[in-house]
Amino acid sequence: MRSGMKKDSSALARVRCEGVFCLALLTMMCGGRRANAQAVEGFAWTDLRGETDRVGAVIKALEGEKYTVLREIAVVSDEALVITASRPNPTARPDQDHYTVYSVDLKNASDKPVQLMTGTHLQFRDWLRFVRDGETELVATYDDCSDCRATTFLTAFYLDAKTRKWRARWPREVAGAPLFSAAPGNPGETDQAYALMVGADGRAVLATWSHFQQRKRGTGDDYLFEYDVDPASGLERSRQVLGSEAGPLRNRLCKAEGSVLDIAAGQETASCKQVSRAGERRAPRHSSRRRRVFTKPLVGESRPH
Image 1 (cartoon, rainbow, N blue to C red):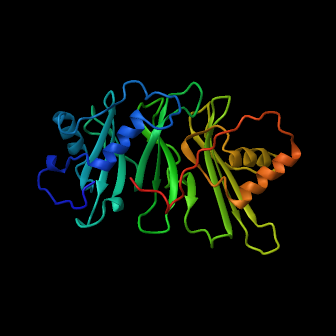
Image 2 (tube, one colour; image 1 turned 90 degrees about the horizontal axis):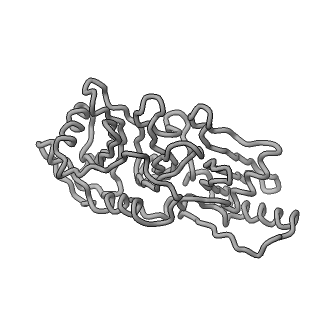
Image 3 (cartoon, rainbow, N blue to C red; image 1 turned 90 degrees about the vertical axis):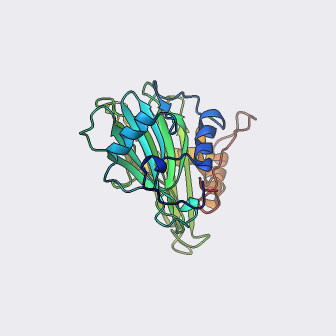
C-alpha cells in the first residue's frame, strides 16, 4: 500500500488496488497451505480498472458511506462483497488503514448496503466449509484497532442460503470470535491458545482457551470456547465448554489436530504443554508418525497486511 493518499474529487479516482492488499489476495488464491476447498460457485474478483460499470454501480450504492479507497469488489451473480479502506490522515501508515466490508445488491439499487465487518489488519485466509455439505466460505481475520493492545477476531463471509446475500460469521457487534487478545495480563500470568480445526466428520470448529493464573498457588481461571456452524439451521454458534467435554477439546486444541489455514497458536504455552504431558501419561503412543502443527504468530509479532 502507498504510505500517502491524496484526496480526489473524482469518485473513480478513489478506486485502487494497492500492492500489499492485492498481493495478499493473490497469495490466498494461488498459494500457501489450503483447506482443499474451492471458491463458492460463480465467485469472481472485479477488475477495478477495467469493469467500470460495476465499479460505478458500487460507488453509487455506497453514497453516504465514509471511506477513502475502494479496495476490492467480489461478486456472485448480482451480490457484491465490497471492501473499503479509510485513512483519515493522508500521512498515516498503510497498516493503520481501517477496513469496512459491505454486502451490496447490484440488481436492486434501492437496497442499502449492509455493513458486515469493520476493523484493521484485515487478512483473507482461504475458502473453507464449516459444514460438510455446505457451501465454502471465505475465512478472514482482523484486529479491532491499530497501534493499540488489539484483539484479533475470526470471521467468514458467506452467501445466506435463503436470501443469497453476503453475510459474516460471528459479528463483533454481537460477541465475535476472538482468537487472541494482547491485553489480558502480564507475561507469565495468562496463556492463550486457539486453533481452527476440521475433524473427520467434516465439521470445522474454532477452539479458543484462555488460562488466567491470578493466584500464586491457585489453579487460576479457565475460559474454553467453541465456535462452529449448526448444520441444521446454517447459523453460527458459540458456547463455553465445561465439564467432561472440556478435557478432550482442550487436548485437541493443544495438539492443533486437523488445524487449517495456519490459524493456530499458543500450543507452546506452559498451559498447553501441561495438557500434552498429561495426555502422554494417560495413553501410550500407538504410532511413531509425527503430527505437523501450524502456528500463526501472535498479535504484535505478525506483519499486518
